[in-house]
Structure formats: C-alpha cells, structure tokens
Length: 186
Length: 181
Image 1 (tube, rainbow over the protein chains, first blue to last red):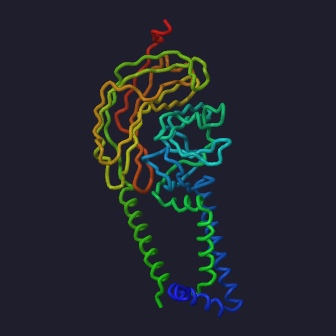
Image 2 (image 1 turned 180 degrees about the vertical axis):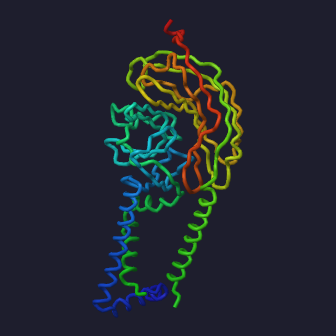
C-alpha cells in the first residue's frame, strides 16, 4: 500500500499539503473557487449568446440514428427572430416529460402574423411525434423549443451519460479533481 | 520525479489535445464549402381528396396524393467531413388560412459510401400530404423542392436546397374514392 502511494506520488502530495501554511491553503481554495466560477460564467455566457436555456445538450436516445447516436454532443441556438422551417433539427420540451427531445421538423403551418405550429419526427422512428406530445397536443409551437441544433460533436457526451448512470463515478471524479486542485502545488 | 500519475496525465492530456486539434481541422477544412447541386423533380399524377384527418382534428381536411420522378446526382456533396445526407422533399404552398405551409412528403438517408445517384420514377410519397384545412383543392401553386441536411463527422449542420424546384397545381375537383362512392 505504501509502495503504491509512492509510485503514484500521493505521499509527496500529502507531505506537501502538510507543509502548506494557512495562507497557501487559502490561496489554493481560492483558485479552486475561480475554476468553478469561470465554468459557471462560460455556461451562463453561452446562454446569453445563443439565446437557448441549454446551449449544449447530449443526445440520450437512438431516435435520430444514424445521424446522432447516444452520447453525441449538440450545440444549440434559439434566436427569437429565426423562423422555424421544415428539415431543421429542434430540441423541444413536452409538458410532463423531464427530458427534452431532439427531433426533426417535418411539417409547418405559419400564419400571417408569424405564429407557427409544427410537427416533428425522429429520423429513426416510423411515425411522427404526436404520440410523444402531451395528451391532446397535436402541434408544437415556438415556446416549446429549447433550441435548434447547429453544431455536432460525436461521442464527447458519453462521460456525462456515465456520470448520470453511476452517480458514484461522478462523486469520485469530482472528489479526486477537487483534492488534486486543493493539494497540488505548482 | 515522474510518477505513474504524472506520465499518465501527460499522455492523456496530449492525446486529447491532438484529437481536439485534428477534429477542429476537419471541421475548419469543410466549413466554407458550397454544397449546391442540380435536381430534377417532376410530378406524374396529382389528385386531391377531402377526408377526415384522424391524426389531427378529425375534421375533413384536404389530402393530396401525388407521385413524382426525381433525378439528382449527389456524389459531389460527399467529402471527408460528411457522414450522412438527410434528403427531404418539401411541398411549399400558401393557403387562405396560412401564409406559409411546408410539408415533407418523402425523405431518405444516404450514408457515405452508399449509392448517391438518384433516379426515381413514379415514386409514392412517404408521408400523408394533409393540409391544415381545405387549402389544397384548386391550389394553383405548390412547389416541390429537394433539400438536404448535411450531418458531418464533427462540425456545423447546414441545410441546402437543390436548384430545380418544380411547381404544380391541384385539380379543382375532389377525386371520389371508390370506398365513398
């Protein structure tokens, strides 16, 4: 056990931590706080720039295969003046469902005054989404949209899926990262 | 002192940054490309019926039927950052109720490496052409366009129209279906 700690350099880190005085420890804690708050700032900043309440989403189902697989990352925008058109991939929320759905628009009807109702379908599904909407709901409207898919990055979201499926992994990773930042001295 | 953690960390970090850099280059090399192409669409048979739309309001709505010919060569659209093309044939028209209606009648997924020369004759539509009312009968201007959404390996998800849209009109009388007599 001691050997393993030596190989991994943990004993060095711990002895360094013991040598730290109060000021140094406070400094480390502060820089840890900086990392957390800048991550939060980036996320909130993206929300402002893209107009979407959730600018980056992870694909959770196979209903858009073979375009999007489970674990792919999508970048969304949601500008109010941007019209909804057929063929776009939208992310929408349905009343009574926690998880937003990523599907393609296949039908729109737009009135003179700009109000628009539309119908969606997953590329990999054989029927449209009316069965997924809230009971009695036949169309989606603009207020249901969380964002429209503009960018695509494969596979990167897999780690968040693992973290959600195994919460212990999430706490483990976060714990190790926090310890590392707090104890490690440059 | 280089411990196992140090070395592992360095390898993982280096691998990740190389992968990220290559992915970005892949995206940057194709982001400004123009994906326009020529398509040829013709309608063969067009008729309109007035039937209850059970999927929506249960009221009698106009339901269009059409068969179409489609020719397009999409081979030129594929490059190293095109994983898949999503083709969709859109009917676009104006009615009294709605300023703009768009209905996808047919779609097709072409993966890279599959045959991307389309020569379709007398195809049936894949989805019902239901209007949101009775705006199809005697509609003088319905435009069919083939569009395609490009799914990259990594990058943006642009959609393009094929040049060569086809306009047609619906007949002024409802077709009587054999069942209704």
